[in-house]
Every structure is written in C-alpha cells, then in structure tokens.
Length: 575
Image (cartoon, rainbow, N blue to C red; front, top):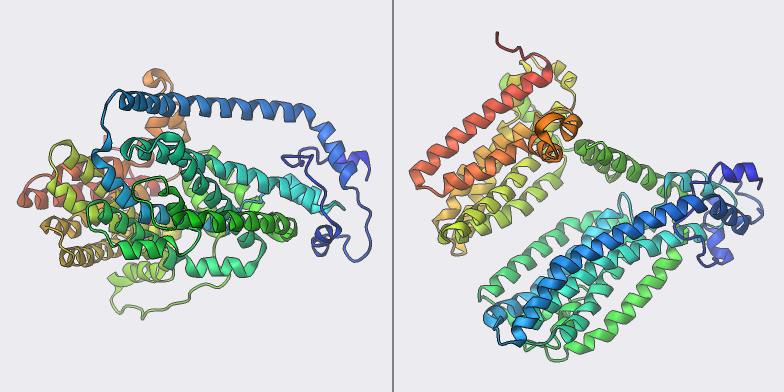
C-alpha cells in the first residue's frame, strides 16, 4: 500500500492501535464485503496501522488531553457531590446518627428493583445495537480503512473494549450508591455492601454489551430483539411496580426468589443482598455462574466483533454520524427521524381500515391508520401512562410540597404518553407543503390532527383508572381522562413549533448565559406550561379541576393554532 493512499485515511485509525493480532479466520470473515475479494490478498495491517499512528500522533495527543480533562471533571464532580456527602453521612453514623428508619422498605424493594434494572439495561443496550451498537467505528474507518486489505479484527475489537469500559462507568456508580444506601440503612458497612454490589455493577453491563455485539453481528438476533421488546418492556414495568409495592409493604417472597433465580438479570440481586440482613439462603452461590457467564459472553463477543459485516458497519456509522450532526445543531427532531429510519424493520405493517364516508373524518382516519401501522407508539404510551396513574393516588393523599411534586411528575409522564400519539401531527408539521392535499386551512388541519390523540388518551385514561380502581386505588385516578385533554393540547403545541431555532442559544444583549435555557423553553413550550398549570389545577377541588383543565385545553389549542399559522406562513401581524 502506498504512502499516499494511507495518508488519505489518516483520520481513520481506531481508538487503540496496539490491540492484539487476530487470527487468519477472523481476517477472512470480511473478504466477501471487500472489492478485492475472490483471491489471495497481501496483509498490510501492521504497516497501515503503524503509518496511521504516526500520522495521527499530534491529533491523538490532543484527543487524549481532551478525554483526560473530561474524565478529571467527571471524577471531581462525583467526588465533590457524592463522595464528600457520603463521607459526611458515614461520619455522622459513627458518632451515633441513626439512618435505619427505612431499611425494611429499601431491602424489600431491592429484589424486584435490581431485577428490573438488570433486565431493563440488557433490553436498552440490545435496542441500541439495532441502529448503532457497541462496535461502531467512524465513517472514515468504515468507508476507507476496512475496504483495504487489512484485518478487521485489529480495527474493530478496540471499539468493543471501549464500549465495555464506558458501560462499566454507570455500573460502578450504581454499585457505589447501593453501597452507601445499604451501608447506612442496614448498618452493613460501605466496603462489604459496595464489594458485593460491584459484582452486579460490572457483570450486567458487560453482559449487556456482549449481547449487543450479537445483535449487531447476527441478523437473527436483531429480529428476536424486535419481537421480544414489547414483552420484555412489560416485564420491566411489572417488576418496577412490584418493587414499589414491596417497598410499601405488599411483598410476595416466593415470586421475588423465582425472579432473582430466573437469569443473570436477577443474580446480581442475590449477590448484592448477601451481606445484608435480608440475604437469601444460597444467594452467594449465584456469584460463580454470574462470573462464568460474564467471562464466556465477553470472550464470545470479542471473537464475534471481528465478523460484523461491512454493510452493517457502514449503516451504523452513517446513522451515528447523522445523529451526532443533528445533536450538534440542536435538531433533536432530525436526530429522532434518523434513529427511526435506522431502526425500522424491512417488513412494514400494512394494516388497512375502511375509509370514511364522511369528509370530515378523513384526517382522523389517516392519523388512526398511521398509528395502527406503528404499534410501538401505543406501547410507549402505555409505558408512560402506567407510572403516571400509579402516582395519582399517592399524590392525592400527600400534602404540601410532596403533593405538588408528585402531581407534577405524574403530569409530565402523562404528557409523554400523549405525545407518543401525536406523531402524525408532527410528520405533517415537518413540511407544511405536505398539507397540499387538504381542503382545510393549515391551522384548522393541525387542530383536526388532535382528534385521534385526544380520544386515544382519554380512552387510555378511562381504562387505566378502571384497572387502578379495581386494584384498590382512590378516586383521584379518575382525573386521568380529564387531564388527557390538556396533555394532548400541549403535545399539539410542541408539534407545531417548526424548525429548530438555534439562534436562541446565542441571544445577544441582556440574555447573558440564558441562551440554552431560552432554547429549552421554546423547544418544550407545551410541557413547560402544562406541568405547573396542571399541578395547580389538579390540586384544587373536583369542580375547579374540571374548569381549569378545560380552560387550559382551550388556551393550549389556540396557541397551537397560532403556531400552525406562523409555520405555514399565513400569519399576519396586526397593525
């Protein structure tokens, strides 16, 4: 390979040029994706990577300094806000302070809670591998370097280990937080609690990263992740609900033990509870299979990383670059569209419903058809609506600031549920020229897009309130169908916001450093107004709550209408 050709890809080196050599079998796994496949090729891997390291030496030193500074800042923040605070708590405990008032609630919530965290982490990382994955190299590496006669293992495997190292950071922090909480409340001591919790904090992220490599490497694994996502998401939600119920005193010990022994997502709970007063008999025996499974999974993922097809790497590199570019320019909607296109199925749902015979039902018919062809929207709406309903009853029984905070949190989750159903309106607002088919003015068209989300949100609220009532919840849950109306109106306000206004982040004059906050207030204008207003409305009496919700719905819909007029260019300022 000539020096000129190598210098043209000087930005395509991996994160670690000193990684180990791959065997010849790994090198041959990518031959079918290369233009020179079909005959013996000369191996230029060592010379190419050595040249790239020499050419990139100044850039690598600068990049190492940036990463080192970021790590230093992160360590200082964690030490200042977490370490010193925890040290002070343990000092007070050594002087006689008692923090064991809620130890029973904590230990009761940990079995199903840790299981939910483990299963949820594996699901999230596996879903991430559908569009990006742990083995994602820069576009220069994928488009140029891997197309040359080089061994892909030496280029791809370092990225796998970088992803493993990054995945360990939240795991170690979670183990430290668990060590502080258990050490104080159960009087176990920080080091024993942290040491046993660290096993799960290390093994579960590594298992999740290894599973993500399988999703990225094998198309069959990716199909199974898509199929099992709704089931696993419901299981995680049920485990979270069970954890909350256990903390409130409603435990099922037999079910908890079955969940903890069900797989590697529950074994960390068995191991982590070992030094506590709630230790499960034989729980320490889960340490050995957890460690063995983690080592085996990491070894298999290390081997499989070299065999990821070049076409898959190119798709993920382009998707990651597109998302990064959208985030740098604060185009969050564009980033979500890139993610949706990268993770969409090759086989789409072609569900059809009979067309309406009345003209004014055309827009709701189109919206309902679009939502039925994207059932994941309904699933995400349920996932957000369920915890919102669970918070309704405790919020009604609380008082003072706790009531306001719980009501605001429930309102925020409810808004996120309603926003999932407003996707057809957002698609229409992405380009107002798409409304050329409609006989209605653009502002009226956008209001008609609110019909289906409002009806679906109210229906979800009625069903959820009925189920919560059957489970023993109070009458406060029946505020959910009423609150669904202003939540849908707020979603329409955000749907009509138009192109991203990056200029707000650099507002001159008296704004000072308020630019990012002004941008966030514009971007999330609907929920920014909705959440505090709804928290105030639902905190009043029943009659006032109905009046306030209807008034808030009318105001937000009028705001959405004015935004739609501005978006379409038909708005005219008054003289």
